[in-house]
Length: 329
Image 1 (tube, helix red, strand yellow):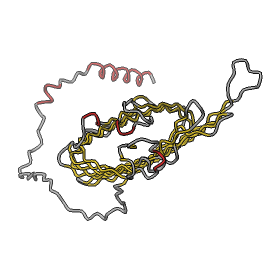
Image 2 (cartoon, helix red, strand yellow):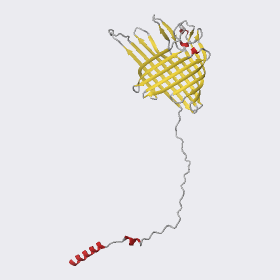
Image 3 (cartoon, one colour):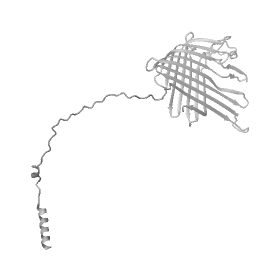
Image 4 (cartoon, helix red, strand yellow):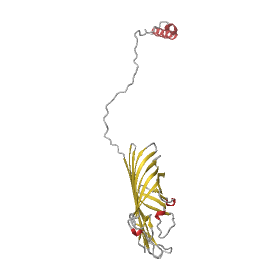
């Protein structure tokens, strides 16, 4: 056992003293032989291949439609002993606006129908209308360049019901009715449309027919809305400018402005007429909206005051809170 242990210790001491010189080993390193056969590489090419694709079952709709309906209701009531005074009243207003557009290639068609009617009833008085308008506009155009079009349009304007002037002595003077006046306007010319919010029509060739089918609106005047006494229609040739601006100026606040200029060719410059219609909305939520609308008119032919030769600007303004439904929202 002692001899075996001594031999083991000697072996361990030898293992510790052996050193390997790697430089000497590198002399015996043999590199592997190179591949003597040539290697061919192919150039990658990309080419177009036709793959049969079946047509999807989609239909392109070139029509766009917008509908807006509003109903406004106002009511006020006072007790008999209310010291500040007041009169019980009920007011109702409606507004229907329908717009459609067809656009394909150079062809562009826009149609708009706007119907407005409002009525109020005060205690001790009969019902009186506050708003009344029928407006129907149709325009078809073909594109000439990026922003210019050649267009033709047909526009109809009138009102639904009779309109009166309420004199201080309690009498009434009728000044309007359905088709008294009524306007039918045909126009051709050039349209400038640089964007979807602004539109300008220059109607170089415009004809307008003015109708007064209810002779009760004459009220002892020689003319009514430019139509001579005893006649029911008048024709005018004119230059017309129509401009529209429609934009949401802030979130939930749409602004709609329309300006119309009418310059008769055969009359004095004093017969140039202007009309501005503006509507500003403020959306409370999806169904409730506040509307502020106004109209300004300067037209010598539509002077509603009997036996008056002077021309005065006409204006109306209204604000209403009501239920509004729009599609698409």
